[in-house]
Length: 449
Image 1 (cartoon, rainbow, N blue to C red):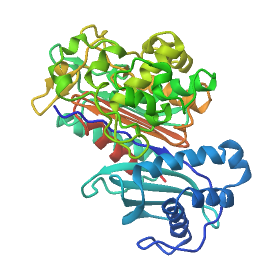
Image 2: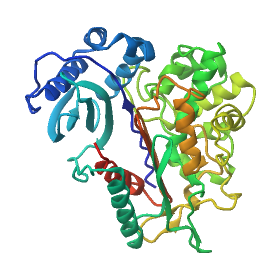
Image 3: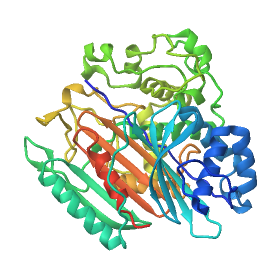
């Protein structure tokens, strides 16, 4: 079984005028020079980025988002990507530049720099999206003149995709707090022919990791743990003593722990119906040797997020699912979100369908999702979540609501949550990846500038 776990990281900076230097391939314009300045600082390392922030970020912006928080985002990106080299400029204007960049330690990535129309221009934000290892692909940038044209194009595209059985799910598009588009397509249950609805619950896959991240930072803010604490402090009986002694909570969050995945031979050979708690996942991976020395590399780690879930349970004194419901879902107004057992799905929950024959993905699912993913939510709940983040009801320094982009995917499920300064896009699908990712990419390509 090919398990897909996708994550898109978005970051935002606000800066004053850039230096006049230029990277090859970028336009010799004020906008191009601004982008070049950022890339040069990124490649030079933390000292250069610190100096860059201190020199170019306005004081009022630093009051909203401190320099150390900005540097923390940079470190996470730097650790994952290494150095960046421009490959192809995809779109350029006075207010936006999109280009493909080759990262030395990771995949091909697409950066979109959103610029303020000032003289010289300032940088409003940066969107960073994995493109994979091969050649970049995607829809041509075709910004619509208005939100009305944007919505019309989105509706026509999804109608056609659904009619060709290329999309099944639900989509929400908002500008600020105003809904622009909300519609469901396809079937939630093919056997009963129950349709997907705008309030249907969909499996989010790895999007659920953001709730684990928030929970850890909540407990840290309460002084109940520190990001530099090691696993052994909370889980003294962790099966791999070496990992317990070395790996920090921070490394688990950033996927630089060396702990591997729980998907694999053991998972395939396990009666999945019996996997119904965080502890049930440990026999699938926890005794395995570290894949690398903690902090020396980065590799996607579902196992690491299982460990985080266990730490949350230990520190809070309640099970992971109850903690998230009480401390994140309830404050954010997410009344229809939860981790449902796969043989006890409530009504109006989408069944995942995989492969070209659209077979149910039941056999591949654990009995219940986890702190690494597999919970269920709806369009409106995720919209409420973004609004709660914008209001500071729930927060985490690792993700900002004005620059949030996360994705999840596995057989029979694909989900995208994308939020910028003034828009929110949610795409939920009960088909294989990249169903939601493809739709989201096309919708973003039409976004009015």
